[in-house]
Length: 114
Length: 110
Picture (cartoon, rainbow over the protein chains, first blue to last red):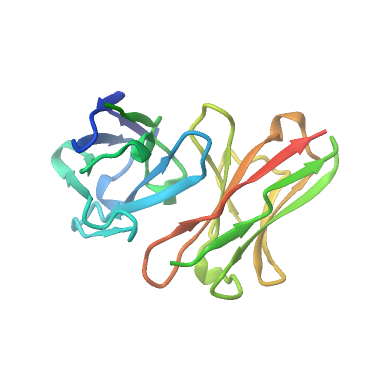
């Protein structure tokens, strides 16, 4: 069955970067784009960007343009999301999802605190 | 960036019917926005209920249905159950390939 397993919780200082991984299994990895979505405490879901798992093309929300990088390793069927210049407002749960499949990762809590 | 709007909160009686809507600041929502609907309960990851306006996943309860209604995407719950109490989000795709979530609707079953 389809599974998306994300890396564990992170605590980072302001100004640092964080890299979250998402290991996909149970389907043909290159068939679907994988999206990253985040949710700050008590807030709405927010779309961050997606990667075409086949050719590596990416698209990002203008809110994160320049601060976010999404990459993939097809041999490892893993997608990575790196967010730089972290600030306290980036404290959130980050999710990966090949949204077309309907499946979601379990979420990764990133806490930004001095 | 477009703004996607949802009712902030709705209440439905057990066994009742309720329709949640999803509008766009750019105009009428069409099938070309590929509307998605997600359910999220506290402390859990979102669960996808509806994709491409009206298609259901294998796990989507039959009481949920998606449609287009009056220029908006709509999620109708017929025969509400206590376990349907949750936050519901819609997602619309736009021509710049940057999808946008709505603000969410908190549904109370009371």
